[in-house]
Length: 226
Image (cartoon, rainbow, N blue to C red):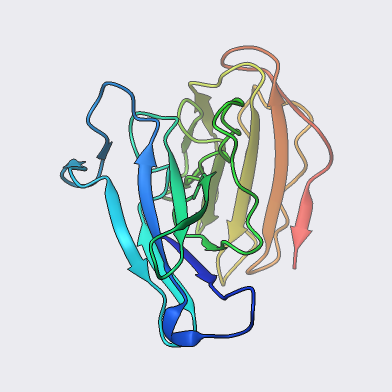
């Protein structure tokens, strides 16, 4: 998703809507590489400056750009040049825009390129693995840190694999609409709470791995929902 930027331009002597001005947007900070946006097919950015984007009849200027967090190499930023209707430059400011966000230039703090780049927020990605029911399921911990299974029968034994020391692992055990099914926790999960037998219930418990492949110790008792 692009970043949307907007701003309202005016004059120092009252509104003169027909002559509000424009902005120019330029991508900077890509160094010796052609900036690119990895998508289903990598896009190389050839036009790096959008000249003289004019305000509308009420003085508002808007544009959409790729988020700096989408662009490679890392460390890019944009400059926004504000001009009057004669083309005279009022000021040039630098900004970091993140994909999917909206920015009002009137209250968005500019970025100082002489200072270190502000840290980008961590990526959010799916960490929940849904495991098909089996009476002897395995819970892999090498890729996912949240593992869920819905019981429609009894689990007589279960195991874990790929557990990484220091990680927190959350287990979500659900009863189906029948309920009453039993669940035997993996033997390397110590101090686990018994699963709620009520139909439609969820048992949620988080463990910390104190060594690769276990053991896993609970950081607190399980929670039952509803």
